[in-house]
Length: 207
Image (cartoon, rainbow, N blue to C red; front, side):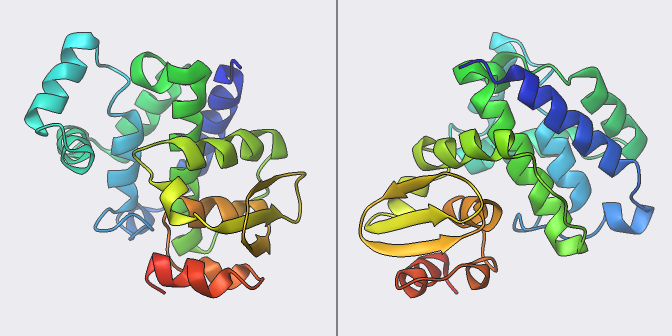
């Protein structure tokens, strides 16, 4: 499935939101451990200017560890001003390279989850179009780098605002957005979910 049009829409929404933030909010913490808003935005755009050799070089610098590879990209871009990061994001609404993989699923998953990583700590929620949420719910379960499959094994996940279920076992139910964030390993969202499997999921997320 080609999801690139959904990536374009999500990145455009993210760029428009970032334009409303104050300098203080750009330095605010996010749900990504040790990353400020500017760091998360730097990560989102950090792969867009890389060709194949650039990607290989980035992975070599990060010794092929996903967390270290991402840290290399953030370090290369986080010194840019908010205006420069927004301009770069707007110049790359169309995913390319790694973020265009799987028909755009990589870029959509990355942009949507990180958009929420920024919004939640700032207390600035939004209504996410369901056509974006549904494919990201699926990809959070299958993307090896996220580890979602192992995080929710033995649980049946039920979205209460989308026609979406996954897995088997003790049920965890709730809105699609906190389900997505929990699958992706974000703490602090399990309280928005319910069901007999909620405690097991909370324990796996560390509270």
